[in-house]
Length: 482
Image (cartoon, rainbow, N blue to C red; front, side, top):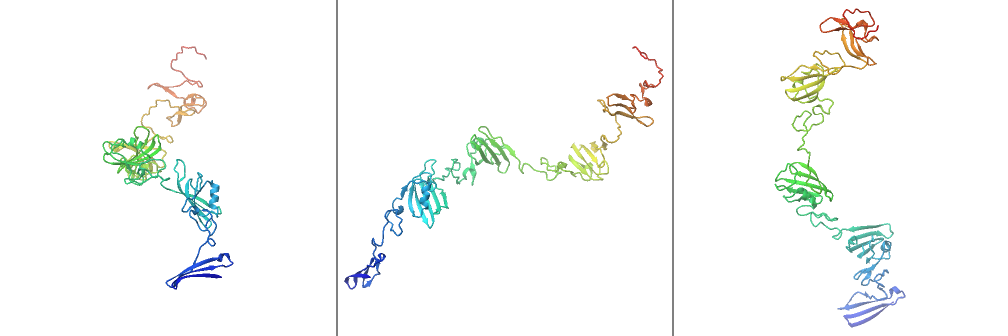
């Protein structure tokens, strides 16, 4: 039931108050409206302690309470407390702990930075906390921005750090080597030459001394006559690029150098002294053969070059007489200049076109043929000594050492009747036998060799086993026993 109080000034201006004294507490309220210019405004409910209730304190989370100034840290200071990680998680996960501003004064807590004003935000069963740290003590991680995200069930809780100028410090210059600094790009080039133009050293620099003083990176110099320590041969007025790779602060470093438009070098940089430059081979200063018979001076041999590294290299075609290159070769049957009509392989060696020689092994022969150039042309082929077949030796052969083969025939000759006999041999007891040793006697009686002195008469050697006539006078100065 409503009761209305009407207060009128005139017919065009009045005020009405409406009161509801219902038995239901929620409906006990009153309203008012104004009449202006003869027209009534809409009814407006009047707020009072019966239908609106303020927070009991700034952290009261009762549903429906009206927030007061400083509620949950808004407008005024957030609350400060000291919580370890377990207690901090309990606060963050607790559904009754609403959105708020807070500060945790406990150090090294993962879910917020120490002494950092922080925000706790909630949405459904999810929460997040963001801390804005300012403490920059050495070794203390309580600066920067840290965000923590999780759920009330406790199955999710992740921590992320945001990079700021407090924990992500840029280089002061492109060669600033302070530990932990962020590499930057400069107008002239990048950090240590990365991402831009290589750091330029003064033209009159001592290359070794300069590189000892700088960190790992890329460097360059426009060479002049005053530049010291460049790899030889030095090109004045050229650009040199250096890649310095430092191992420690002794300093021990590896340096590579490149001449723009030229060669490359590598060297070691120590605590003192210069750089021992070693040339690096590349396609401009290490040229391969264009083929296995390319004779370009200084070219690097490739596999099969002149027969090296190959099973067979047929680089002599048509005639052995026209060969001009040293190496291993093979030739086909019927090749001009070969020692026979069959195919074979061999070696060509010489000093120039007039001083050459060839060794070949024709197919089917167990031997080697040799020839050389003489008087500008090739001489006849000669068969070298073959141990497996009989050969005729036409020239005198002088042996300075004794020719003796143990337990075998040493010398063999052909008699006038055509039979072949041993002239001398040595038996298993190393006893030298003169004559044919086929029989067990020391000197074979049936083939007694004769002794001839100069061009005189030939005489038989005394044979103890047969009767002999001694026609010449024999004088014995010693005692004879018969």
